Image (cartoon, rainbow, N blue to C red):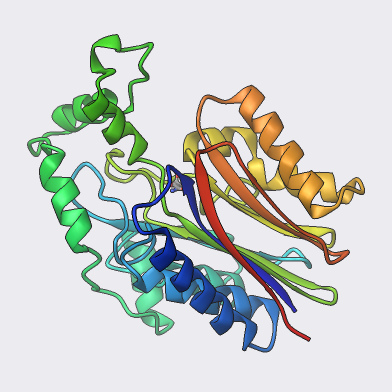
Length: 304
Ligand SMILES: NC(=O)C[C@H](N)C(=O)O
């Protein structure tokens, strides 16, 4: 089996060695399992409990001060499940898996997704706040509890430097840079079986209830008989560009995984303002990664 995992596209992390060790541990857990679905879920579960990553515990906080998780999972035979906007759910990837395996649907969201998680035995009611999220939230000067105030606050934080040149200070840039980091994903292949999954707390400072690319099929994750891909970065841009589908379409046209990842990110970079990264595994056994952000940590393993 081959398995690759990422810890999000963004600026270089403060503790790269620690994060890399967790990614390697996640891979080791994935590699011990019996098939690609179990492998990507096992790897992602390790990352979801580690507060250094923006998934599960340590997820990004939305404008109402709530961490909501999203995830998606797809396999080579077209089976797919996703879940979004779930407060108190650490293992979002397991909810996505249950949607895929237990329901006739592709995606569940919000409080009913949380009830579903509970019904299928995924733990709910978890405190997803980590120390670092608490500090960052306090510094963010949260809005008062009024929809118009939330919208104003979010617009200010998502304004580009061109839209609002006054905001282009180092501190504001730090706020902007903190928005898109640390989502996690994994892709695994064993013979003809392929699975791709992504899990996140979303983007920092997003409007409460926002759902990004991660649980959208073809945006944050995709798989077909040709291979699988997991994306990370500016979710609105990734969704618009269908980034994961784009990479797998390149595999379908005969590209190896590295070429597919590089071309997909090149095309994304031409079309969008945001940063993104992608990991790709081809049915031919090739593995690739590419990103247009300053950094993206990955780990890769092959077992016989
Ligand atoms: N860090 C990330 O990759 C964020 C994720 N793509 C989202 O927009 O929800």
